[in-house]
Image (cartoon, rainbow, N blue to C red; front, top):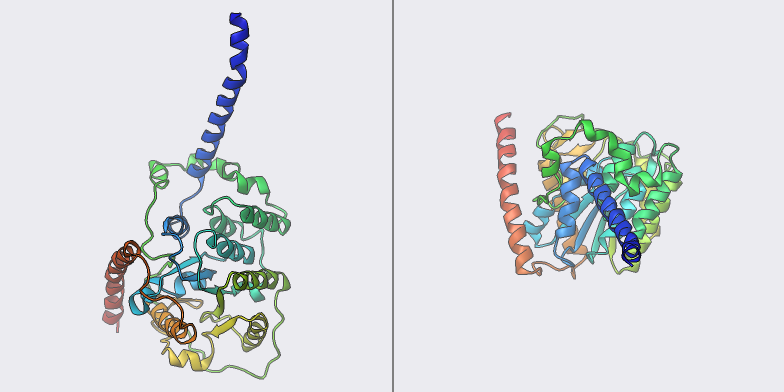
Amino acid sequence: MWKEKKNRWVPVRCMIVIVAFMMIFIFLGKLFIPYYKQDTDQNRTFYETEKNTVDVLIAGSSTLLVGFSPLELWEDYGIVAHTRASTVQAPPVTWLNIKDAYRYQKPKVVVMGITSLFLEYNYNVYEPYLRRGMDFKRFSLDKLKVISEIVKRSDSQHMADYIFPLLRYHDRWKELRWTDLYNLQYRHDIMRGQYPVYRAKAIDARDHVDKNVEPEKENEDSWSFYKDIIEYCESQGSKVIVVNMPDDRWTYGRYLTAKKLTEECGADYIDFNLEELLEEINIDWEKDFYDPHHLNPVGAQKATKYLGDYLIENYPDLPRNQCSEKTAELLNADLKEYKKELKVFEEQLTSEK
């Protein structure tokens, strides 16, 4: 009798052991993932943002990570925006950032960068950047799909490593510190996804653009993801603005192709590299960049003002100052902290004149 009761508990004990093991395995996976402020805090803050409050979603690679200020859009236009961007972001990750966002928000406008449209993205070499764009996304079928797409394009990566991060980062045990436990805690990203780099670097001004060129051939694999996400956003009732930020890799041939492809899909197109637009926003080649490809916060202010004016002029139904009191209070608090940091940087630039 006693033996029968004992045997009856065996499956229960096995289940408890399995569940405990899985919980420990998942916990260690989160613990061993390296912490990156611009990726970890950005994603955690997005998931904690009040649902259906983000009206403008900004997504793409590092040029958008630094190039637009959601807080400036809030201060000057009353627009609630959030950036979901990462360094060297692959087109499938941009696809996931936007698709994943629709699980929590209903953006009226999506601003999307297409940095990789003319690049051969090396999925082996850029594996660390892929991980930074993927590791902090919540699990979903869309995430599984993107993992599959990444693995198909790489001969050194495996689906299991993305699904169970401990398999990828197990050798970090030698680097672990008490701060890694602290990094598991939620920390609010006051910048709403933007990652400002507070330094200035003078770069060569673009004094001539050769317009007598043929359209440059796009990367068809990259465009397939960008096109798919444009069509998805439109199916959700969102307007799409495709942007190219100021970048010394730009050519007029790339402009011709990008404009044609995006407009064929029904999306709007803004290219900050056009001479007339650079003049309109009054770009300063000595003080508005931190490297030849990226704007610093002062340059981002100028690009953001143009974007804000464009949004108001072209999308008059875009909500302004219509978020909840809770969201408005948090945005104002974030804005106050950001202005302190920006003031220090602006004073530094003034002193260097």
